[in-house]
Image 1 (cartoon, rainbow, N blue to C red):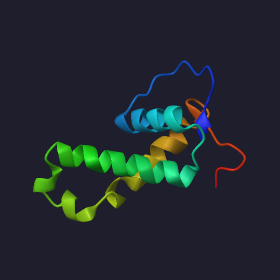
Image 2: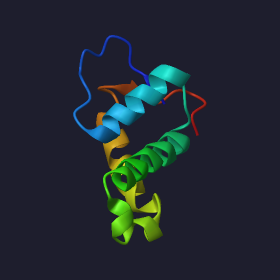
Image 3: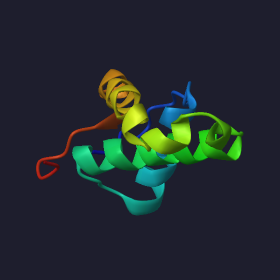
Image 4: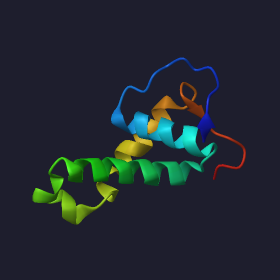
Length: 87
């Protein structure tokens, strides 16, 4: 995935914010890697907010992968786009 130039749309969710920051920092990132890293960021964010007190600490970032995948797919064409060698 890579940022869509001149999008003008702002990130609407924390997952979109993490993805935008990552793509801005690193340029093109394979879709699967973007999903995994956004899921990890969401997981770490929840741990910082006290998620370690409940079962989230045992589940790991896999708990957030479906949400990360949904957000990344939903913003494709609006914030970022698939690039030829992303998979």
